[in-house]
Image 1 (cartoon, rainbow, N blue to C red):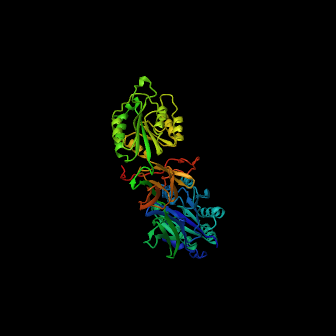
Image 2 (cartoon, one colour):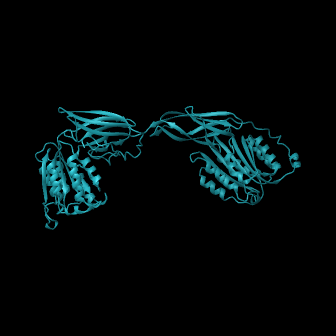
Image 3 (cartoon, one colour):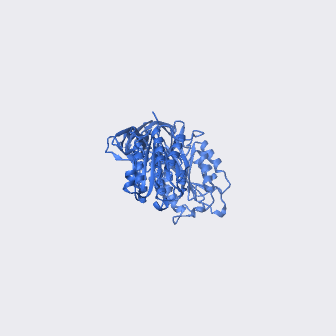
Amino acid sequence: MRNSFIVVLFVLVCGYASAADKDALEPLSSLPAMGPGELKVEIHSPTDDLQSTGEEISFDVEGVASTIGGVRFIDMMLVLDTSSSLRQSDPDDYRTAAAIGLIESFSPKSDTNIGVVGFNGKSKLTQSLTSNRDDVVLALRDLGQSGGTALAAGILTALDELMLNGRPESSRVIMLFTDGKSNKKKARVAARQAQSQGIAIQTMLLGENLKGGFLLEEIALATGGSFVWVTDPEKLPDAFLDLRTTGVDRVTLSVNGSEPIPARLAGGTFTGTVPLEVGENRIVALATSLDDRTAESVVSVRVNDASCAALEVAALNEGQPALSLNERAVEIVVDASRSMWGQIDGKSKMAVAKEILHDASIWLPEGLNLALRAYGNASPSDASDCTDSTLLVPFGTESRIAIRAAISQLRPLGQTPIAYALTQAAGDFAALESERTLVLVTDGIESCGGDPVAAARELRDQGIMIHLIGFGLSSVADEDAASLQAIADASGGRFLMANSAAELRKSLEVTVGTHYRVWKENTVVATGVLGSAEPMLLPVGDYRVELDSIPAHEAQISLAARDDLTLTFEKAGGVVSYSEHRDQLQPTSCEDAMVSMTHSQNNRGPAFTSAKTTRRPDRAWR
């Protein structure tokens, strides 16, 4: 198939002509009119499957429509008159504004190369064909105003550049702008050369020069182009945008037989926004040529539902909501050192902690084996007592009243012997065979020279996990926070920050239950705790949920888009099973739900912070 080309000729002609001039103008009989080329239209985007988190999305459809050449690319030459007469015919330089407006109207995604030719008494290529729109704009701004009007030279220079750097299968467009009368013979020679190469010349005239107008109209007719006459320079910006440079009058878009909507045409490219639904979408672009022929391009695009799924893990023990499938012992160790006099929201940290711990003794589930230990509450700070740690309430499932009474008597007095308190706590668990967890609530680091990290490792070796709640610390980057994180890491537990009463309660909620891990193949992608009622958002896929129980239990699950899955482990008569209950979520983006899926080096802990969570109403056990 031969390549066809478009030359768009913008000619500004100043002055007036008499009726005699019109009569004297000979028709271009030696240039027989070139018939219209084949109308082609092609959608370039979208081409692949799309992802959506909603019932409907809006998508920009883009493509090219042309009766000249192919529809894969557009190569456009702007050929602009720079003669001195423009100072009078276009004193406000609407020429440049119009050309820049056309360039800026192209979609950033459109595959259009643009070049610039300036001409007065002679012609000059000021910008070769390029995809860089900024370079084109700069070239347009640098055009001057001096000299005569060599229309034919502008056309020939543009033809040379298109032949040298134009791409195969492209629609090739030359846009030429002048305001002066040109040599008729030379213009006909240039038109004949364009016609011989299959190039259509679209012409535009600014002014009221009939002689120049008739010449341009005949050149356009002979080469298969069109002619536009503009008498007011202020109308140039609109005329540039409205010019049908590739012989296409309009393009409409429809989806799955919907009512067609008009696309925006600019230099042969079209863009339009259409609604797409989850599932198959048949997009039709219908192009209509200037002579009312039609052609269409069709693409089928599948929109996949990329909504997240929600996962909550719960437990039932003999039919009752539980924090564990087994007997579970939790010892809360409270910092009662002098620093707990520090203020949070107008109250001492100690006062806030006492209120939350008092409430916790009520909402923690019945049957939980609970103990309370404190440090720094017996000896004043100046006594430097580094053995100030007392088991205030030993383990027991009926210990709540005693715990509340002990909490009410706490007073911030002494040092912060964390290592000593941890070592002593190990003995508190000695007679227990159940799952064992220690929760340390503190606002500071070791002050007695002990090694709490070593003490945490010793508890880990005994099967005791330590979770730390940093209460009232300045920030995660604080040195105290880093020290407390190290203690939690040494035992395989968690470190959480709490800077308000609400955060302290939440931190207690997510440390007293049995922890679980969510695996994606060999990577831990999220962690959680039974009873926290914090569903996590996860991408669609297959997962393995593993409880850190004794013995460990696991379940294989599959999550589909918008699944709201509650996975329940249930222990009845000594037998553990699991069940699934699924609801539907509203469409929810999963873009930020997961951070990364870096493989955990030891395959024990999470490779990163857990997935996003979203709150649900309080569960019955609270």
